[in-house]
Structure formats: C-alpha cells, structure tokens
Amino acid sequence: MCLGIPGKVVETFQEHDILMGKVSFDGVVKKVCLEHVPDAAPGEYVLVHVGFALSKIEEAQARQVFELLDALEMPSELDESGDTG
Image (tube, rainbow, N blue to C red; front, side, top):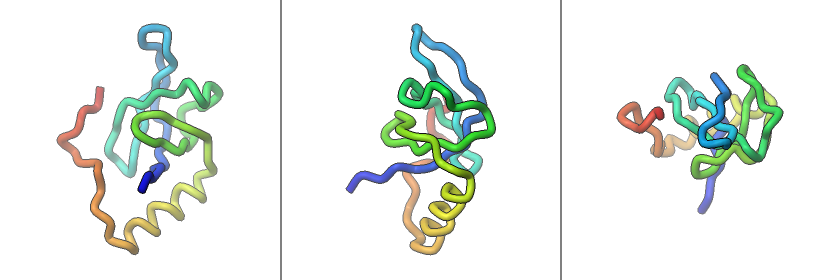
C-alpha cells in the first residue's frame, strides 16, 4: 500500500537545478522534491510520496490526515534520526 503524507513547506531552494524544499511532517523535517508543485511556498501544505511532493493540499486536510493516523496508531516511517538534508 502506498501512502502520501502531508507536510508543511518550511523552505524552498534549488539543488542541481531541481526545485527542492524542506518540509515538516508534524515536526520532523525532510528534504523533498517540489518539481511537481512549483508554486508551493513556505507555509503551504503538500502531499508527499517517497520524497516527491505530488500536490498541494489545504491545512485542514493535512490536519485530518494526521488525526486519522493518530487514531489508527499507525507506526510512522518518519523518525527523528532520519536525514534532514
């Protein structure tokens, strides 16, 4: 099963001519490719799958997903020892 996780764009930058961003997943910051959502700006939410932001989503939708994951008590692939770029 594939699952996209919402995250909040903290920063955008270019890396090797590719639009990248630092995205916070409920406090855990990861480096994400933003090429599919070039208009994503800091403070906005994106849906991320395997390191690629696929679409922008509203903050309310992102919070609903986090609440659902918390309710399901799903283990997270994210941990604080991960690469933050």
